[in-house]
Length: 248
Image 1 (spheres, rainbow, N blue to C red):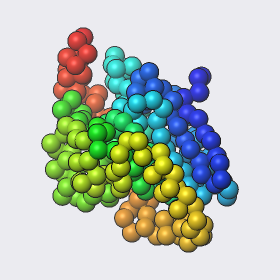
Image 2: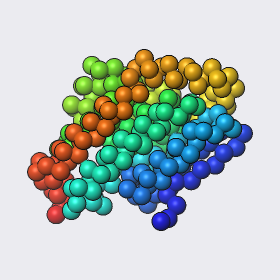
Image 3: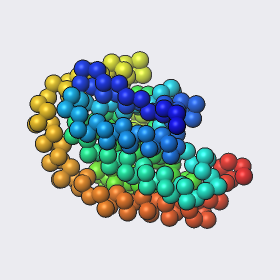
Image 4: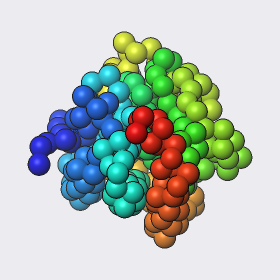
């Protein structure tokens, strides 16, 4: 298995990078598996104060690599379940998490951005949830979006589908920071460095309590969401639309 996720830890800041640039870091089963194992390994690292999630190349993450499993609906369902477990692993990290979004964050990729505590992007980035346009149910990303921007705005965004600019995503609350592209790295590192100065116990307990308050610890709901998405993507409507999109 090739290395699809790299990890670098310097001065208490862990940088987790998805490395599938030729596919815009689309989420294959192997990439999801490696991402989850990397994240879970960080959970008990006392020397890590902040985690940055990023993507290699021009995109952050183009979403699920459905074309790779287009003829296998069961595999699609398995990938959605694996993504749900990975999002839970990210949310349960005791240290702050930052998504550095230098390019496209689409569908499941936007879900990865939103599940992090902070999202740093730039005005020209492309973000959003086009799932319904493809006949897919965005249930697996919906819980994190609801917690991020509220039920009403999340309802409108997911039902409308489509994508938006990083500037609009920031205005709607799915990103916490929006800076010019040439400042993205410095802004991300400034945020990470500032967070690393906080009291580790205070931050850990603050994150734990916030997760209690917003229901982030409800594993059953996240897993149910994955089953809903899996059921729809395996159905005729989604399969027909996906086939048309790829000309098959």
